[in-house]
Length: 306
Ligand code: ADP
Ligand code: MG
Image (cartoon, rainbow, N blue to C red):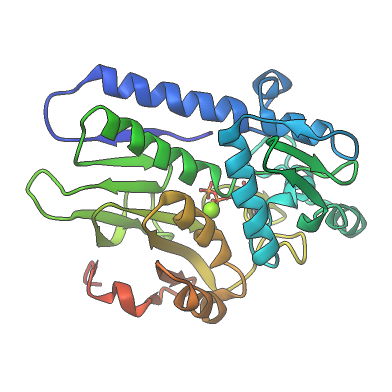
């Protein structure tokens, strides 16, 4: 998934747990990826759906089907911010991969016409997915790491791990309580500093904390910086007053989803949307350094004194 997974739990290291988690993560990566060289995508069920776009319905395993369904339904609901059908546009930009470049306006306009989430047919009984038109592409990149983090936590629990921290490239799952019996303190990465530099912490217990920032994967052309979260309305990276959004929710899938939804429209709009959503809280950090938390989080947020 192009990232590093870190597991942290008290007690002696247990390779059976880490190996089981690694197997689960690699299995998901193999089935879900739509990026990388053809060899990396050969076993991808999502890529099989994409390859059959405009033609056949493709049967995928029930787990993959469930995640695709979640992503497509969320895309229908939040289309101007989260749209898993944004694949053709993401591919054209290629941000984070070799050959990344700024596509021209005509190319973007043409590709945007291939991103309608209503043009996906899903059959729950048969676990099949059909993309309505050739050239359509599903891209689960904005939700897959969250889903994988949730599954990694399940595997840990199955192995008797009750408390621990899982970090999948900024998607953190806080399982249970810390080894000293209090909620975990999860750092909020500073969007302005090197990785590991935190602006503060949020306490979390059996919850996930996910950060999406405009600093994560970047293409620089002619002094301009383009990041990898695409505004589904314009086909270009979101350009708002936000540098990052950190979302807290019961599941990492949900937190990952909302970390993308909250990017649209900047601080005011993102704040409004998160406030109206059930079971989602967020901390917004703007380019000028303001830090704004939704009310449900304020008591759990500790900021490094500036
Ligand atoms: P990261 O944790 O890598 O920062 P995000 O959760 O922010 O990832 O998702 C970014 C990825 O999601 C992109 O690399 C792309 O594959 C896909 N994507 C980009 N823009 C959108 C969007 N508006 N809606 C859904 N998926 C998107
Ligand atoms: Mg996301």
